[in-house]
Image (cartoon, rainbow, N blue to C red; front, side, top):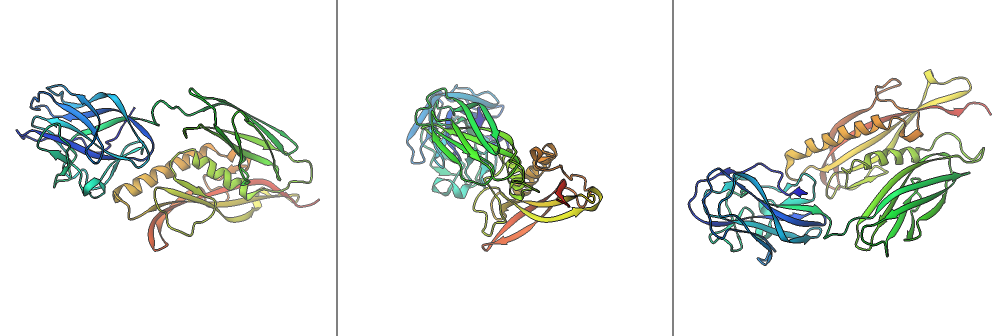
Length: 412
């Protein structure tokens, strides 16, 4: 289970009055709210008939539970009798009754606060319904429609699971890949705890061609490649309710003699994108330098920059190459909270460095990533700003030098 609030814990405010105190939140993907959690200081005032409630933004009760007359100190979770499903971009208000001496984090909701897993946003004051958050009502049990001037967090939050209701995504338990002179046959083994009736099966062949799409129980597809190499193959199965399961594999393709030579820049770019995509950190990864601004979320792009022969690794018969690619991260410099932009981007850069260390040969497509710069500048990053479509973007470029030994024969 996950929780919505990732900001600072409240501190206790001494106040003898009773209130209903709430937080307006939004789903960034489909979730099921399974509980409410409440923070209390060491000296809360008892309240007989105390409740906690999930409300629609218009004040309709979606789920309500009874809470103890006396609250324990710190965070305490209370399960809902009736879970509440929220789909992408739906909002709600979660609240509880206070007898006095409540928790409060002043100005914690000046801007949006996103949960640790990114699935829930506690809405900043201006983005909340009615343009206010840190909500209260002087009567416990009534909808908290008024926002506090301090834009504070009152220590009430949701507990949730990803996905809607009991629908679990399909599972691909096995993926068999067989190559015969450049034609690869893929067979996926699929299960689902509910039903696979109407499920869609999609095969991404990793060579920039169109995906193959079929309907379950058709889980076998074939594809013919035009160049030898190692290709990432991604299979996804989406059930009739929209839940998706994935499985990735790789296949070494060998074409008959004289049909393939040298290297394929597109394959390497696709492999770089594939390694980065496994991090789950990007809204999208483009295989070209973008010309427009980033609309929302952290995005990336990868493109080819240079090819240079390597004298030290070449002979009179064969030439070795250093090929450098740029993997650039983009985020909107004007989004809030601004203080979170660089820490998040540098965290992802660290993950990318780890991925390119682990994928030292990109699945066999290259000899190595020149991490330490043996044959020129090594794996490195550079931060800066880019103005695209009139919007200021924060950008970090990661330069990935790839070495291919004996890429070309010098004589035939």
